[in-house]
Image 1 (spheres, rainbow, N blue to C red):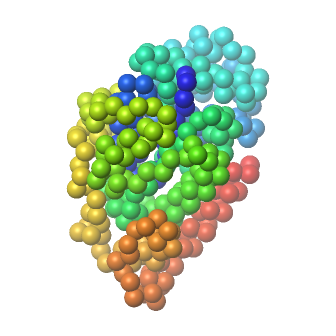
Image 2 (image 1 turned 90 degrees about the horizontal axis):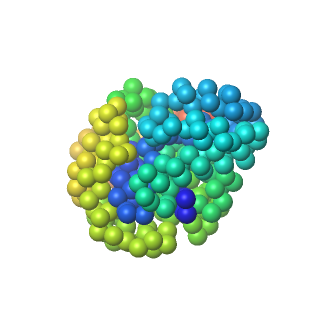
Image 3 (image 1 turned 120 degrees about the vertical axis):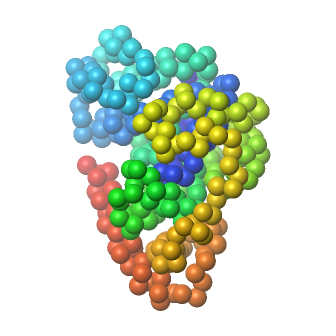
Length: 307
């Protein structure tokens, strides 16, 4: 594979939409979500798991996400002797090269909202890769997460603290690790001017923009599987330009105040206008659990990263 492109962002920020658009490019092939960075790359690089041919085969055999590739990985593994993290990296290079060859495309793409904490690991394994980070208004992100099957039972404060931690981590590590190969995209800009944004992204990636990218919804079934369609149904439709600021009608004033109070400075830095100006004291009280949760969340993930 020629270029490697990694796409991340907080879940419900438009990662699947942008993945589908990029996958529709005649030279770019994204895999379905495999979570290979979290499940294989990071444990191998950190020494948490000492992979060999036997235990790697066992893990792959049980991995439903890898099964989505519909690719016989066993001959590829038989050709490799797994003795170190570099061997694991080389195996996945070979695996994904075989996958994109099926589509006759030279460039590989991986999309995973869970990758924000692991950006340095991605850089180490794929030093010439590109990182695309898509950002969306936190109020719309949290509303969407609250309505999803997988997020509707998650405490409100956890949604907000996860948003803050993931965004800050991706912003810092993305720019630090990838430099000019770090590409920032705002969901709202993508909806407002999809062709303009895609042209900008393609230029940064060093590929030519093609109008086929706007027909992404015709190929989304190559990326989204049955168990995901309930919360990814919009990628089977053309661009929904009005899919922004839903929070204004669906979040309560208290919920908005909690979000804006908990991550006020981050929202300002990202360019999102606050709707609760002049409510400093109320926001500080309402958002206290969120700010405490954010500290705990960052501590836990920093501690886990050192293991």
